[in-house]
Image (cartoon, rainbow, N blue to C red; front, side, top):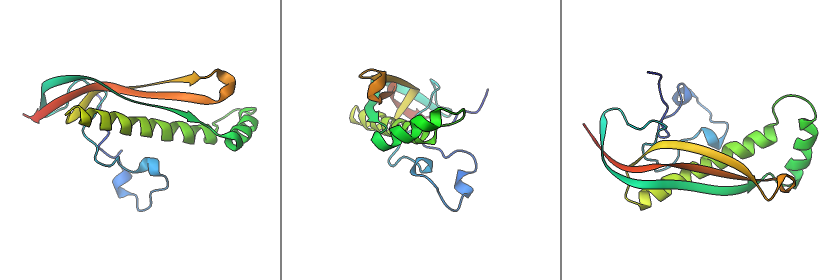
Length: 140
């Protein structure tokens, strides 16, 4: 079975870095176990509490929108959009965790992300949704 990364774990090698270059590399404060899988190794699900989510709508901003439009004319990554989307997913995940904790959960399973344009393609707004199942787990 392939290794699954959980939101409370640093990616391999991150702990060895002396300098974090971006806040997206830092662990989420007060995070609870959450995974894309439907089980957490070494734990049993005692109770399913229901759907939990974190949603936000984010704008790239006028200046980044102009500069990224020029960069989009040539092939390759557009860092302005990458930074905005990465930050938005992180914020959506934090909101999902907060919502799950407010339901009494101590973990989230089946975590997924979804995104869509809001207000038409010209508005430059993106909705980012993180969702999963809030659960109560205990060690085996």
